[in-house]
Length: 69
Image 1 (cartoon, rainbow, N blue to C red):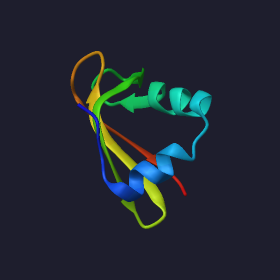
Image 2: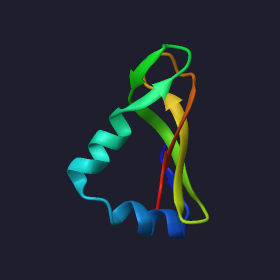
Image 3: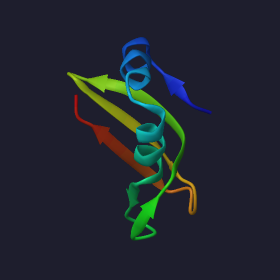
């Protein structure tokens, strides 16, 4: 399940769709030691940065992505 707080949703919606796909599919998993797709994530804001915290599509390990604002 994907969860967004209000500000995170606004910021995420500003990103072009093709860029969103690239960002979500290129998250480093320290367990798999590779770039993976983030799933079941929640999005929050940390200052002007969008923070995605979720699970690796392959191993279900914890992964995160910071998108600088």
